[in-house]
Image 1 (tube, rainbow, N blue to C red):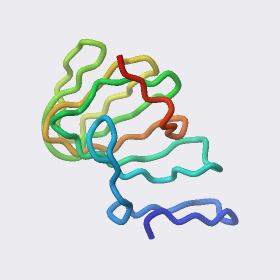
Image 2: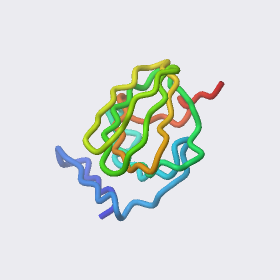
Image 3: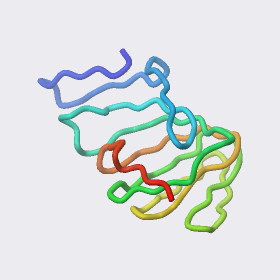
Image 4: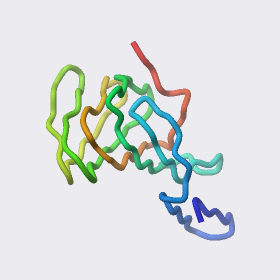
Amino acid sequence: MPDTQDNQKGYRVAQLDEISAVACPCGQTRRAFVAADNPVATLHMVDISSDSRAHYHQKLTEIYLVLEGEGHMELDGDIVPLRPLTSVLIKPGCRHRAVGNLRIVNIPVPAFDPTDEHFD
């Protein structure tokens, strides 16, 4: 049951540990609810890598929730400490990257669009 979808139902269910991880600028991510008929939001579980890349989005707002580990975020040049249950809202245009041994949940709003990842 990685990400079950039934267009007749008013809900969807994702089992994140059954979704294959893919590379992203932050490390490895498991993306739930990514579908052409879902423009609203997606949910990603991300394992941050030591070589995460600073990037920004022109349209997406992201909400990060730290599940495990400690580190920091670089947000438009500011350093913000991270530990479990820290949450960060990242607005469009904010250059960001997470640093540390971290597992996070990322909620992109609207739904994740891979063409909206930009690097300087």
